Length: 344
Length: 278
Image (cartoon, rainbow over all chains, first blue to last red; front, side, top):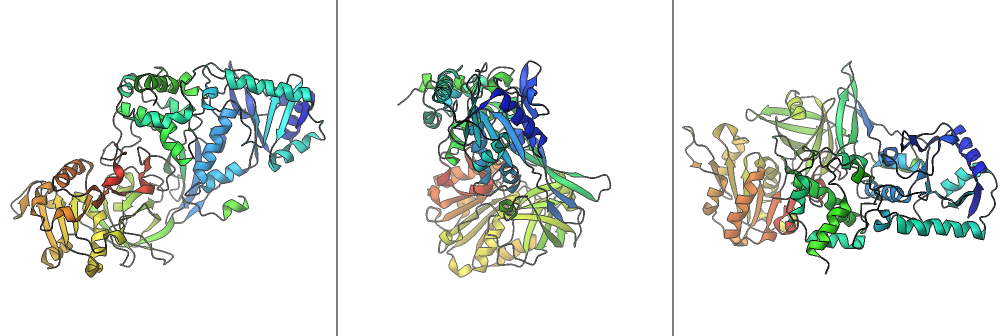
């Protein structure tokens, strides 16, 4: 692995910004943090705890055009993709992106998502300080060793770089030749990761995440769903901030000349009341408790079935922070169920 | 677009199609005969559906109502929302977009040689007709065929010419009921489950195919349980909110199943751990 000094790193980021790539990095947003187009290296804040929204809007935009059409019948695909660098993705958010990569490419291949994704270079970074609600340690996502193009770890006087792919190598080439990381650098890196494995755990889960699908098998009719959903606004905030939520709606728009238009897709959320409503007004998931339960079942049981058992909650804690009635905390629900219906 | 993605088909892109014939069947339902402009056959299995695009308005999932043994394909569309209302306003010759066919259809090979009982509620006749026509086109490959149809009222009956033909045929047993009777109707009155005792074949040895409004399934399944029909011989054609049709957008989920992918046709025995299904 290589080591890059703070100064050389800032120069490298400046070079990236100057290149023909779009550079997106974590920056301060009032007293919180957000991913956004980076204009100056100095704006980059890799010491952040958590961003308001996950970086999912760069792999799956909140709204994107799928097709354009002409009235009278022809449709044309629109693939909007260009080279993009994502700077500062935390391990748990990276795991979420990797899961979405699998879900969008398996079975029916989504060319819109994949074309965009293939042009993105992800520079992940180890967490500098835990956020208020993170529980990535419980979910096994506090530290990662694959899935990124490059992983950087702050070791005090610079960063240790783990360059994993050709895309990563191409990117770091802009920094010129770099020294190898020393034994001490690597030891400090290990220390950062060991610390994160333990401490990104504000809401400790009382079981191994791999047990969750089994637990949920027995929890379908448990009263907790009703209890929690009594104060649920069905606002969909949990869907919005969640790095693994990707359900979308598809709509058409027509231009003022009534001759041309486009079909677009936009984020949608299963907590919203009409998510499962059909023409004729039958709602297949009318009760809030059912919708509330569905989301947690998706994360810990249904989606794992599609991706080899990986739990689709990465412990970022954003839903915990975003939920006004404070019912979204998955760990609170799973722990309550564990206490009640226990382990085998 | 990078090379690898340009070789992949865009699963969201409709292909152009033309409305060859259209005629109203009831106040709300319209019949369409559609062909794909490229000339290729749709290549569907009975029980699959297509996503129909009306440019500028949107897309709606419609079950295919015809057998793949016919030319082009037929749809019966109820005017129930923005897209279907716009579709109703289109004339013969108008262009629409088609994606599909999607979903798992009926397992026609497994049904070969069996006695079949169709239970259709209202608009549920439309998707089931794709299999009924397929079976009638291969009549010798199947055993007894009985069709039970329940419609809300006389004005809501559709495919009426065909229903008359079925009533005349010697090689199938077709019985109908209306929820609400009227002067023009001399037949049975009652919900479709009231026809089940009139089934001639031994239900416990038959394969039963069910399609109708959500509320119907529970009652039909209760009657079939009483008649001791094995659950793996009951096929349910379930509706959900299909949007993308390709298992991504999430709207059609029931528990862990994406109905557009693993359905809309399910064996009842497969739905044991899918409580949201019925």
